[in-house]
Length: 452
Ligand code: TYD
Ligand code: MG
Image (cartoon, rainbow, N blue to C red; front, side, top):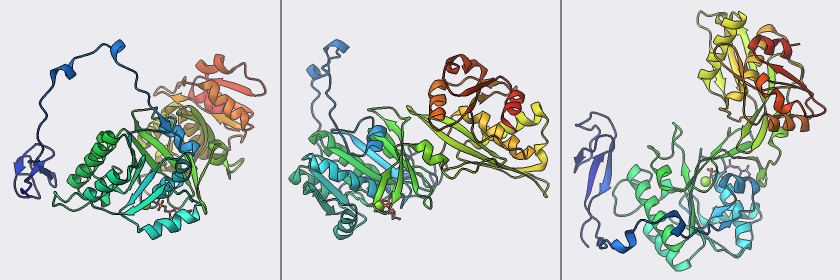
């Protein structure tokens, strides 16, 4: 067999060398050289011009995207209505968050539809997977398990068994024998993924690939995988807490704003179909520093509690901390409160937290963050039946948000009586019965209405 040649190529500047180097001599960056195959024994297909004719939209036949429901509604919604046949989906997340659990759980319902699933694990033995499957009541005969890490053997197995769905757990443990670097390295991960992509597109097989997240939050280094697959899902949540949030980061077949909420229980992952109730459970009532807001995640409104603690600092430099939301945004809101209301926050440590472990980036939560900070600073509680939303501008104005009606309806459903909304949104929500709406246009008005 001809020896396959590889080269090391700098991912930053394209410098090539035959030997691995820790630092690229061209651009001077460290650890950017990656092994790549330069000679593949593949014959090139001659270009057929008749297949390369541009076509008008009218002439292109509609692709019937067939979807398979996974039997888990929260997952189906995040995917945009089930797994598209022949698509490649990456499921990323911290170790121990529940990726393997989620993927084995969908096997029962898919298997019952008569579709064949091949579950390939490079991390656990088939006995270990069986133990878990037994605990999760997976009994389908259409699930085949394989413990293997060599991608070429996996390719053969797939060709022989002809499954409808393959699950690769995880891509970091797989290796291709024509590359000498260790499993999990950038070149191995890329090569293995491109092989799976090839198998999947050729045989119209759907593939779910598990990817571990590195410390800085990207999958296997420089996010190479995200470009290759159709859909990227991230599994988030605190390991110690029981809830898990599944989020689509990229989706060629649906929206990326949807989130799925799960709870890790004794019997695997349980769906949380009413996340608002879940996020507000155990909320302290009538204490300073707590405000409730509503954020739109995808098509769904979710209520969340913002907590703030502002306490006098004994050191020169006050500490500031924000979890679950953008830190810089919180700093801006504090500056607005200092300038427009006259708060002396420079002498206080401030901690802001979104309870429930959820992350919200929507500016619509601004008003509730500012109210929670003010409530803790003034030591005055916010009425526990109050919900606050609105974006805050730098001059202290409260700006309109989208889908205000949906937010108010969700709050009404959960028994909130008083809702503080941006003045611009008032006309959209004033017709809703059984609820008191307070329109506000400045931060000053907001605090007058929210603090009691
Ligand atoms: P796992 O799916 O193995 O995580 P990942 O594949 O993302 O690394 O889940 C691991 C955790 O989930 C583990 O700490 C145990 C817990 N778990 C439960 O609490 N209940 C269960 O039914 C299962 C299967 C796992
Ligand atoms: Mg796992």
